[in-house]
Length: 104
Image 1: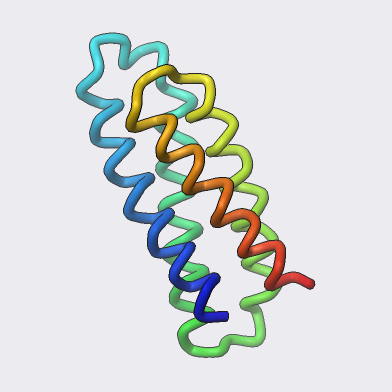
Image 2 (image 1 turned 90 degrees about the vertical axis):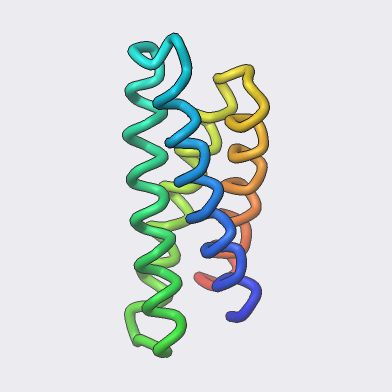
């Protein structure tokens, strides 16, 4: 579980940083779906980290949702060519993999 908590926290941070960077890009209007997905991903990673940290019985179910959102975020960020989005996509995909391991 510790690996998943670490991955979710890293993903949360990457998404927040990427979201901020996207808001400062000249083509921000073209990034609306990506920005919304980054926001969702950061929120679900935060919740997953909290539930796992307190050994909630709902951790497994939330990790399943978290994996799905992380995969969507990786796909959205992967469409962008800048470094911050490409790096975030990699981190989101790794988080999704860790969350899938939690769901067994």
